[in-house]
Length: 323
Image (cartoon, rainbow, N blue to C red):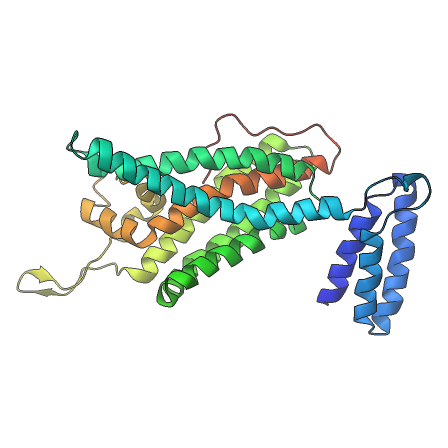
């Protein structure tokens, strides 16, 4: 039941404001009251009861403390605004890239076209790491409890924002991008869940390794699914020596994410320059968005997981290569 789960989450937030010696007893009493209301199907009153505990001041020695709406409000604001920060990073990096290429490189160098994607990727990665450093602070003060809730709290706003942008741009584009986008949202949520769980056990280094590798795999799989859904494998029908439609050989599929970021085949015969053009034309925006969003998501869940143990803050690695 959705209302019961929401009420449980509110009770968890309320219980965290009390000393550990009282927390368990209070939580049991509140849960019993909640169970009675749920049995009687009084859902509205159940939510009102849980919300009153979560938002009201505590009595006794904690009466001077601020209500929990402070941490909850800060957490909600961070998680709702961060996806827009990721989108802003992509837009700003794209604008700067266009200015640099058109004003500085276009007339000075013959290879200016090959510099576009590396520049966009590098600027996006730099700004994404900067956003991740802020997210690390937000994570240490997160009002969410539990690895799964933290992962879902991050990815649900991300999904809504990206789907909304795709829908506003083109309904047909959203339909074509849906398989890759859904796979990325699903697998990255699982990766964040696992990273938060590892950090909660004190295994911060393992959490970063698992998170970075898992995020790369999730983004690569999403790019592959998007390209496969939109571009046939070939060989295409040949008429008068001319192929009737463009194709991309699947043998190079594991490289497509990195090819999109760099506009390069890494010295391998596949993908060919024309295949690289087709791939980037289909998934360039999504691939750069994955790069902009993933660092702050990982930084948030790992620091939130470590903070749940009451340990010192977990700093972001100085050079994070994150999808």
